Image (cartoon, rainbow, N blue to C red; front, top):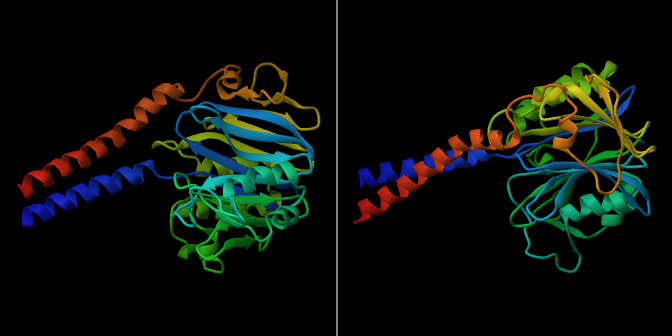
Length: 333
């Protein structure tokens, strides 16, 4: 029995280690100081990323997305009314469904359709209305919304109904735990996936609120970026809803910054490049590798090598788990 207990513990440790290594990531914020800024660090395995400007009935919509084997999955955006939304992974899983029933809506649709159809955060919440937000079984998300009026909210699926955490002060931060679980609690009492990144972002924004600008926003992202593990920071976006501009850093390279104009439908070099380049940006979009080719130095190994490097620890943990299963079966016999 003692040997079986040791084998079971080894198996559990290996599987928990594998899950912890895979993890979840991404950091988002909305800040209202002298300059209104929103932002998102997108952390994900090395799939191709893309930026585009779509045209909808409400106007232009900038979107950041990533390749999902058959299509690009949208994960963050801002429309020409300055309405921002990001969807990030969240744990633990709640309100999962194979398909939405009558009166239900997948939370990802609330993210994307809200950007396509609404102009303000209040407009999004009214559009959602009494519909219950539910989750895909394979991917749990929560949404951060913000608009130029100073209104921002984290919207989540809850066990008993939708959970809305409204901004209470000059800024709002979202990582990967349920914001609604920790409303009103002290910063040190927050726990869950992304809690430490949340504290780092929160404290830096709070300490630099008076002079918070695009450079300070990228400093938040530098401090909360992921440089190890399967979910590394693929891009960092800073949104200026007043100028309708988006600033882009790729693959944790904060020396080379691109700027998107929703007004002009362009993307251009902004900082750190030897020559000025301006490109049209439309529905077809432009990929991360295309943009990185303009930088003199690309940080770290290419994405395919990155992926091969960071997966070895995870494969080792999984192999340990499989070995534990084999050992456990052998002990039973």
